[in-house]
Length: 123
Image (cartoon, rainbow, N blue to C red; front, side, top):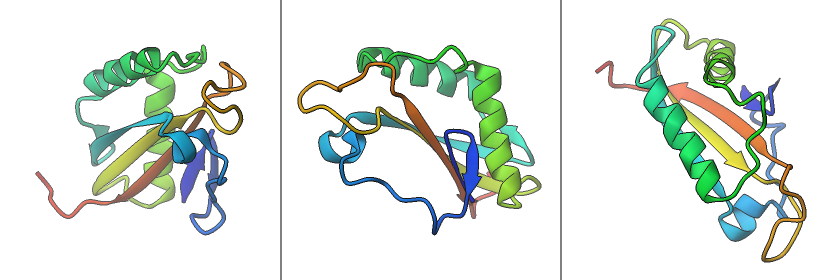
């Protein structure tokens, strides 16, 4: 299962549009996190780096992008993939969706996706 903007969907059903700015122009960012038994390692560090990166890209940070929100979306995805009692690698992506050439057509269009997969190293 993949989490796209808070909605869980099958990985087969999730598709990246060819006009997505992250794909087309590299106008995106990501954090890779490790989750062990439902605990996100270094969550605060990842969160502040994510926020700083979004500011550098001049993304409009949604009001709901709190550390608690990010944590809940990550854990929801980990649990949906039956990885809550094991070790998981999680990729948290942020992009501006579609539209625009040099500049995005909207500063407020921010998407996120979360993908969790088993991580073989327990350390």
